Image 1 (tube, rainbow, N blue to C red):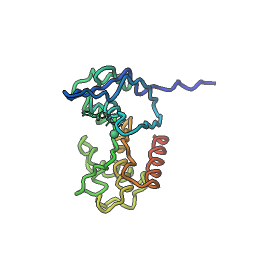
Image 2 (image 1 turned 90 degrees about the horizontal axis):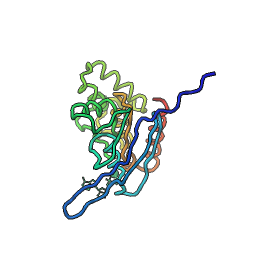
Image 3 (image 1 turned 30 degrees about the vertical axis):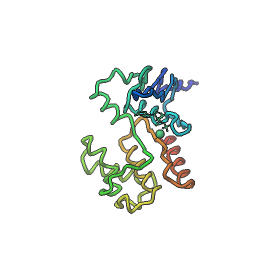
Image 4 (image 1 turned 135 degrees about the vertical axis):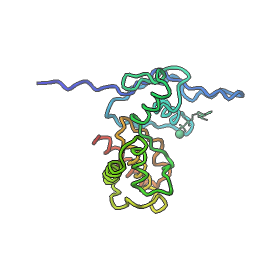
Length: 200
Ligand code: ADP
Ligand code: MG
């Protein structure tokens, strides 16, 4: 009989503080946050507006750096990386889903999803095939050539989720992904994220 391997800590947040010095006042957005997140874990961070959720996400996504403490992802301390290494980290490790879907209005669903792959040098035919597959997985196989203004809010968020996942990131950060959706559609989007997390 073999024992299963112990769960792997993917994200280790160690005493992270973030202060914004505005001259007239110092805002403590995060105070000494320590948290382990395991590979494959689905985690919701809840708190009122202004409690530091986006600031914490920006630390994990390496969009901003802590005032003190450290963020260690896959054993690598983010503050040790050069800006070139950070760019590589962001494009290979992180998929970001935003409250406002941030799709490019002039392009159809396939192109919006394929763009991150095209930017990373993947051949157009390959990128398109992967975008189609991802859009099918999020339930949009019937809206491949629709532009954002031809899609509902929930469908646009599905396109954004497909775009965040198409390059197979290790971590998906979704910052209030349902804030612009009605309750029912929001629940569908959360269900979709949960099931994708289980599958991946
Ligand atoms: P949440 O996402 O939970 O609503 P935020 O992380 O956006 O909260 O903000 C946490 C606190 O940090 C708030 O008080 C906010 O005003 C402040 N804050 C966030 N970003 C900045 C910034 N760039 N400059 C100054 N203060 C900021
Ligand atoms: Mg926020």
